[in-house]
Length: 205
Image 1: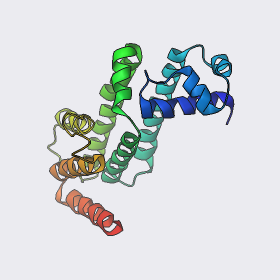
Image 2 (image 1 turned 90 degrees about the horizontal axis):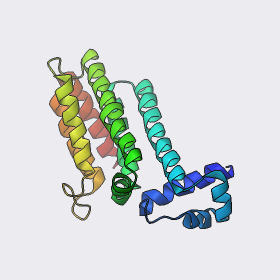
Image 3 (image 1 turned 30 degrees about the vertical axis):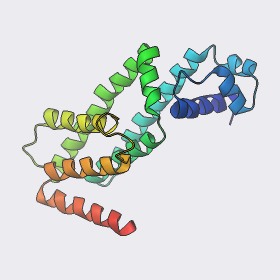
Image 4 (image 1 turned 180 degrees about the vertical axis):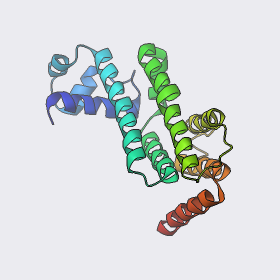
């Protein structure tokens, strides 16, 4: 891994663990095992590092959604795959990072909000259309309303006021809201497939 990639990878890891404000360029250099001067040779300042790091996270997320859609056998498998990805990402993300971005880096936060309102919502709508075409989701669904409902479910799962970490485990929250969502929109055929996935998961556990 070249120096620039290592710096960026280390910075993202530290931002996700400690938040953005608490991490200094010196901290990043020390964790990388290089001098602070070397960090500044690749990134003009911390703002540049935060900009590029967060853009990479959003790009990676968007790329995953596209790949998952192409490789999943059906809409239900696609939705469960994207939910697993989001849950795993949340496990390594300190909510302080999101708070710091919103408060101290409004330009970057606007990109995050745009991705949530456009990229994620678009992916949910496309999944609904796919499921309806495959006969797995009910034909009378109002796509815009149901997609927004799903987006609000996901946002609530990340909200510590709704699901405090000391009372709720993220995996359990996501499993519950996703199962409820799927069984609510699925046809009989789709419900059978959902139950197969759930049974397979229980057998593994």
